[in-house]
Image (cartoon, rainbow, N blue to C red; front, side, top):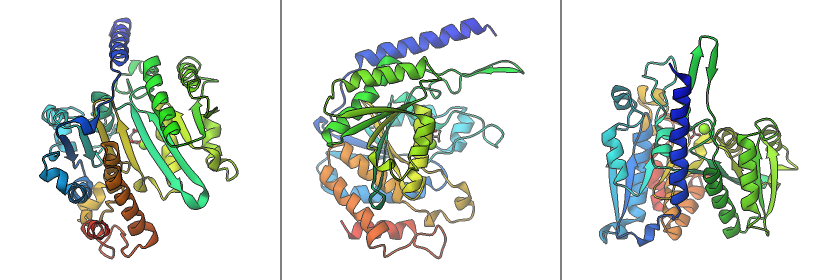
Length: 378
Ligand code: IPM
Ligand code: MG
């Protein structure tokens, strides 16, 4: 292998991406579309079971809009690990074609193969979808009112070690390289989105998280660009922390409630949001928005739990995370009132009233019973 040539190709590919980002400035306005097409992707394991429940809830909330032809649902099958492994692709071509016909997606969990398991080691469908549709912002809110926690993470979703995660190079048995990519326009767009969110929601503080003392070039750029954007928002206090001490400060009772909006490169964001979600009851309770300028995708952040399916327990799987993702979807496409109704119903059904308990087994409620409970509140 000619490493220099391979590296040149990677550089050319990334320069093309930078160019495209620079000309792609406008966000899609969902309400201005004649029709909003919502794709529903079940995914793997418990995904189809829980996503079907979220789909049912959204259909009830959007019944009038569907009748008026303003909203259409499109169920997209085939984004399964079996099909992806057979095609040797993170997302099979026919699935991608269907996805592109939608404006916004609700997605169940998809299995990510790893080296050594029974599946071909294709790229994660999540990561591929984020890159294909340029879903550059991974927005993950975590709220625990009784602990004073109200955090919104803006995780950059297309760059860092994820951009070329499948294009590392083994020089020989002893030496391996991966490549980390940070760009100006890629950082600027996530920073701007975070500061705009902070401004619109009266947040007083935005925190930038890097390891710029060690990873000087790429994290250095990320920090510089974020600070540059911060200057346009003088009413907001901006501070920056290193990722190691940040993971500690989330546990610090005196400190943690001071954080509000956080901006992070991809991998640090991946790690810190799992830690953060744990305060709220674990990754299974969190919803996650993947936003781009032309598409957006909303998903549960937990895994596909294949064992539950093997044991015939998928009907008992908890759909609340993907239903929460559905509420975020409603808000994003311009149905804020319906979103608020659904968020309130979720809080009542899983926290305050909690008439049903989901255990993941037959001694608990089924996902369908839980969705009925939610629907009874709407
Ligand atoms: C997440 C997940 C994914 C990621 C995995 C499944 C590739 O952990 O959405 O946080 O690392 O981004
Ligand atoms: Mg993760």
